[in-house]
Image 1 (tube, one colour):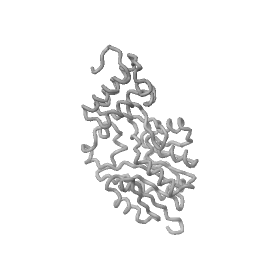
Image 2: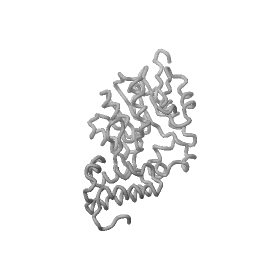
Image 3: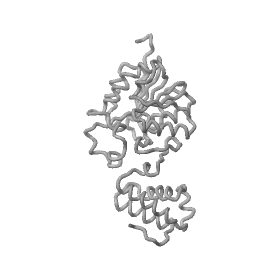
Image 4: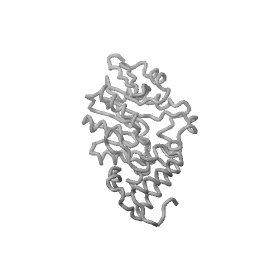
Length: 286
């Protein structure tokens, strides 16, 4: 073990933890050590720097040592702390759900731009509930969220309750439980990784995040195809579909939406196509 029975200050623990993580090639070792140490002592990160000479209690350095061991073995920091920020709010996460990424915030922003008046919103494959909860709180819309995993749906429902968002969470495959014409806006961050690329993923993703939330099938486009095929049934006339784009998926997904109106592709700050939005053709045009 890297620690001893001697009392250890927060400053020393932080330095030693960061060194361990750096030597193991863990990304952002200092920040990771700060997050894990703060979690071990049940304080915010800033508290570490306001009290550097505070000595760790035995149970605290035991927790910190366990958290470091888990991170060194590949477990993502968010699954250790059970928390991840998304759009300025803290969401609870478990290995049953995909960790919300900053890139997915572009889906929220695109939805707010394209369908700001949507009264009924559906988040397909909700995971932690990040999209459904965020859009409900940002717009006041009636919100639904679906997930094929009961465990993921429970996490989403818990986040909705804790953050005060009235979101209806439904366990089903994609949109199969949704009534015809029920929604004004559908958002989704679908699985889009081809199965053949599994071994090329970071171990934190490959070994820890839920398979069903990552992999779409042989091509990576399978879930896109199913969503685009069923979305016209669930959307009301003129309703919007907004989806996150996986790497290299822009042209294929745009082709799936060739019969839709107002197709928009929005890049992230690095210029990478990140979100695609399209509008359902009105009944009179079908």
